[in-house]
Image (cartoon, rainbow, N blue to C red; front, top):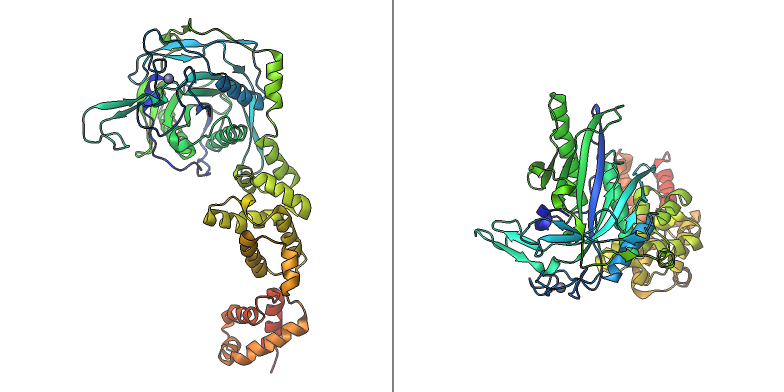
Length: 510
Ligand SMILES: [Zn+2]
């Protein structure tokens, strides 16, 4: 966390980044990402104030988080454990000792004028984040460390985009966020493309949400990213000069900022210039980065151990307990869906990221034995109903057993797609067994050629004008005639068979 980070904008609501490939250049892109995540605790990092978003300004504050003289911090055990769980999920090491340091700098929204952070002895070291690319290939990025620190307050400047004090010439500061536990995940420079950067961040987000480490509400600023980016000619081993891009609070912004910075550095290098090492801000509206300040060095912050806080000591049994509490991780779920069930990466992501969808899917597909057909219903009609009614699929009347039954009935062509759709909508509200309803109400698909022929005759006789049109070459009316057969059969006709019989009759020489 550095001084300028206080005034994050809250504008973007888009988390999903466009997945477009940047035009190839002669340069290899090298990126490392620092990701700040607010931890989901009841209280702040070093005091008993509520860790809550959206309260009236300066209501969740006390002498400790306001940095008043004589106030002493006490570390929040829950925050430390959440961070360690996050590290363990990625295979990080948990050193036996870790400590808090003071990072000294002045910024108006940081009341103590130092930030309690960690310098040389972070809570977790190393680890690796695996992610899936859209094409089904696997990528990874090593973690350098994950450390714990406190968030700053939030400044609102005159004319700032949130408009609260637009037109005036002063700044306001809200200390509700000051002292909120913040973990910083620092990656190695392993990322080579914009797509991988977004896939990496999505993997982090998905894991933190699954572990309950953070809500990761990006629109509330609970995940913020800085990207270190440099270019080098392909084949060169040493890194080029990097810039650090700040102020990104959506994956969409990250993707756009990376693209813009690659273009800027490429044009400097191609015209024979030198990239200057500096911190650059991302301007969402302008779609460009701009210089903020030259890059500070660690010694500028004069880190030293915080004398108010004792080192954190971990017994192996503590680490074992936290490791045990991890449970099944989203990456393992993705692997099962993509590798075993052969789903597309995008479908697998939707299932893993949806509320309770993975467990629901696993239960339904386990019974039906047909992953793809199960997913088609789940991400189609069921997800649409979930959105329309603002109800998660697992709370609807359609149980995993009912969905599996429906998949079976469709697959055996006992019911057509229209009947399946109607049944889902009905069972969503009323519950019940699709098989029992089909049997009781005779909703089974009409696949008997004789029975369909009877309906076809009826439709042809009642639509003489359309029949003439078809025979005169307007074959597009076939869709209408199939629709009439479906209607006359109460929606039960097998549409493929109906069309075949219609064609046979209409195309026959008279
Ligand atoms: Zn407080």
